[in-house]
Amino acid sequence: MDKWPVERYSQWRNKMWIEKQLSKDKCIAFIKNAEFILLNNETVLENINLSGESGFVKSSYSEDNLGILLKKENTISKFRIKFGKNKTTSSINNCLACVSEIRKYLPVKDINANKIQSLEHNSDKLETVHGIALKLLKEEIESESIDNSILLPEDFPLEDFIVQTILDPELNNIVSKIEKSFRKLSFKRTNN
Image (cartoon, rainbow, N blue to C red; front, side):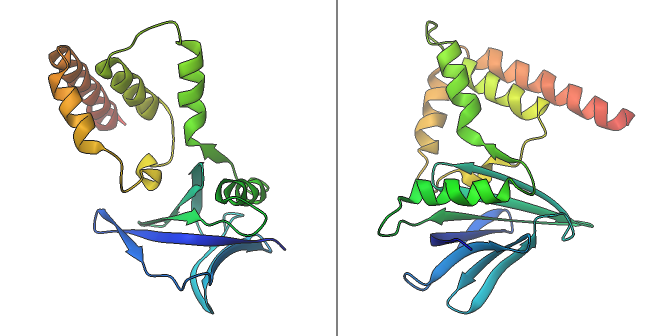
């Protein structure tokens, strides 16, 4: 049974990420009998049955971060972890090894895969901020993807992104397209 070191652990509580204190070099993640277990010293922080007995489970990863969402009856819980490195393996490889094990039980979405394919496909085109935002919004609406905020780094330059978006001369167009999308979504939900 492989064990992977965990550097950071956060839970989604009250619409924000709460980082939990971990004992240095004492937090590990492992999978045993279809159970994903996150252990800090001898305390179990997370224990999720990957075969679906715990409820509906979705997972995604990006580089050395893994996010898991669990929906059971009327409750949703989500957490994210950042893998650490050990003497022989990088944090990214530890994450990939864990993802490989989880994939034996359920799909795990690579958050970066769509972005890389899109960049390769459109490498000859110069895109504006609003064009990229529209593509991301469209992907989110059309797919049943896990909440990508699970993997959004806390040091993400959100303010810079907002400033660039506001300064984009095409902002009015993107806002009207977003409004149309919201209307379509609300219309679909009221008719279901």
